[in-house]
Length: 152
Image 1 (tube, rainbow, N blue to C red):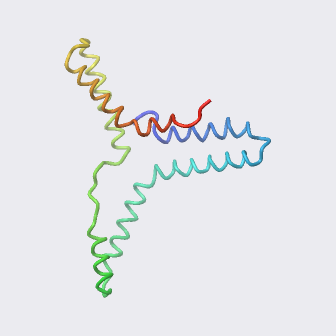
Image 2: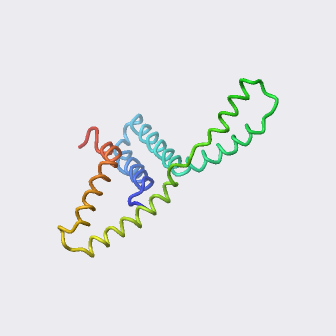
Image 3: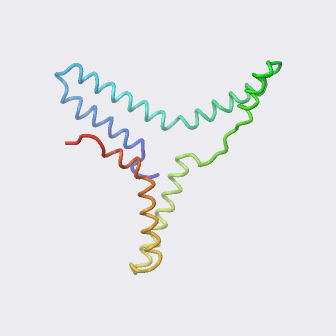
């Protein structure tokens, strides 16, 4: 797994809201209520992030089978159903936990390669730095959004 995971981060935010922010709002009913709402919304996001891919995949397969078995429908509905049933999306990426496990294995291997070649000018170091720069660029969207907005 990539540490911290999205679940770890969302859990830490819930803990911060409930353990630090909410107690500071104890005298303000509106602020206290708002803290409870925010914590519950974040719990919902945690569950959805963990379960949505599998649930949606299972639901789509069930619905596809249900629709494929329909007969004697008006032509325009038959065409719509056929198009929906036949439009099975191609799997593009493995599930997130598999990608995270793969990333961890690959990153450990990269670290071992870098440690095995102490010469900073060796081509493997240049290639690794270029890879890390591209990775940071790919992650910028979610990393940057974590640090926008008002701060103390």
